Length: 93
Image (cartoon, rainbow, N blue to C red; front, side):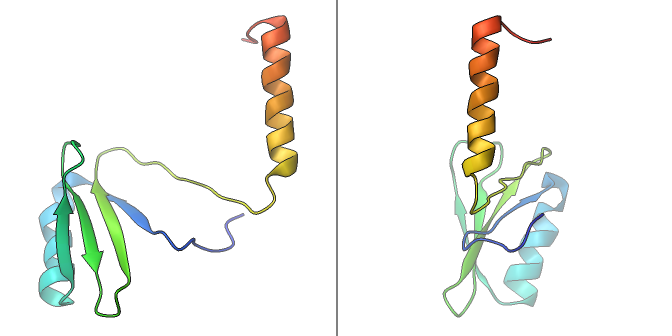
């Protein structure tokens, strides 16, 4: 269960909505935008608010999530145990 967002916010937006997304934040809301080129198909947009808070936007057809938890100990131990079992007996189909 997701309880909260971390301090870092990164959105994924489909490329066909790029111009409208940028116009909404730059023209309508008056945010500052910077484009950052990391060699991706589209530059990453950094949206900055007047209070110095910001978030980044990646324009991509794919989506991904970066779940985080404060209590990863039991999950990490189970993950390590499963990897060790796989290595000992070979790949499980």
